[in-house]
Image (cartoon, rainbow, N blue to C red):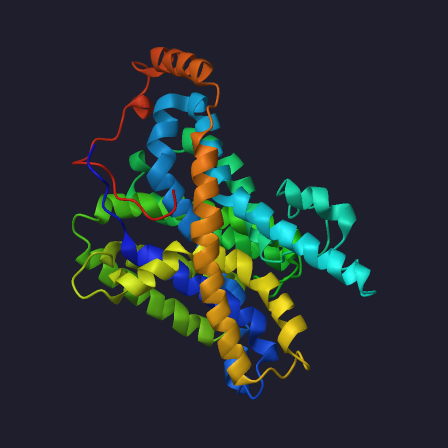
Length: 389
């Protein structure tokens, strides 16, 4: 089997987005940071919305055909792959958080607000952001991983219900726009003025709508990638128009998802073009280790402040530089020593292979000659990939 080419620009962009989240979490601690930069970095939480769109794109590209061809027989394998991708590192970081909580407890600084042991089972099961709590706790960034798990459970039903390949481009674009408007309407009706408002309440719907929009964006890319210049140019114009509208007062809950949707399509269409800086090695590697960066930096900053910082609201630039170097080093270590080995181990586990094969044969026998939706998508060579699987 030929190796699938990689959309390196999207992998690189994931790394940039992860570091935007890092800066978001430390912005109020940087001594002397100009107010304009504080305000800019205060929007770092929006990187998560790009993650959700990108996740839908990646999962549709990697799994839609398999699930459509094999039906629910392929779901156990799909979920195992996704759990292998997100859960081991989450569990490792959660164990680190428990260690911090115990340290606080034995030193007389018990923190039941940020480390509530009664909610620990929810975090172990990755369902803490499914409406069971009203605050972020333990390792705060893991809320989005919890929401992602919900999207993974939803994805097989989406794949079997909708075949974007058989929907006209204008209708796919309309569906993306409708999802953006739906998210905006839900948040505005709930009193949210920004996408970062009340994450425990809106985080899951934020993920599901943007994840679904990402699958539709992938479908557009698949039909336009052979001749990408014109759609990429149009996407850039759309980005500029949305950015100007946002600057002029368009609500964030409407503007940001729409802008990121157009940005994702543009990045996908231009990936692999000559002189694309996002295809380069260093940025690409930051994307490869971005999950470790995203999930590891928050607790590292808690520990860093305990050891090195006297005033958490005025950390010197030198110490901030040291912390950022530690984030990079820890991301490399977590990726190579925890994330990837654990992912390979979970993927190596047998998952009812005989039952799955029998179910697959039954599904193919029932669907191979029934509807056009059961037919495979023909393309030249293996589909491209992103460093996500």
